[in-house]
Length: 61
Image (cartoon, rainbow, N blue to C red; front, side, top):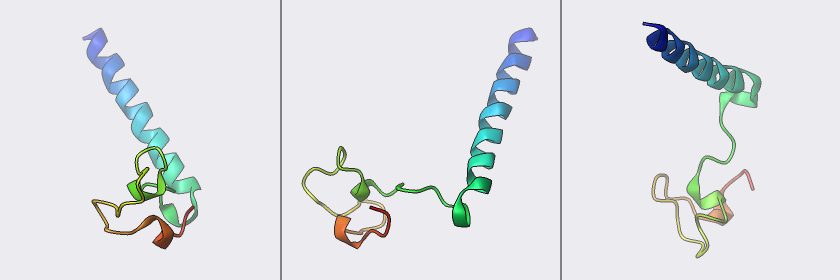
């Protein structure tokens, strides 16, 4: 029972942290979530597999 309460507490803390980050960010969006914006993931300059944007078409560089 003790481990279950600790697990639930840690999950709640993580969810609260994400909620606070979204609340504090402008327009409630995570910055740089598109894979085409990450130079470590997209070394060849390919389009994002999720949204289809090219690195030069992304607004957050």
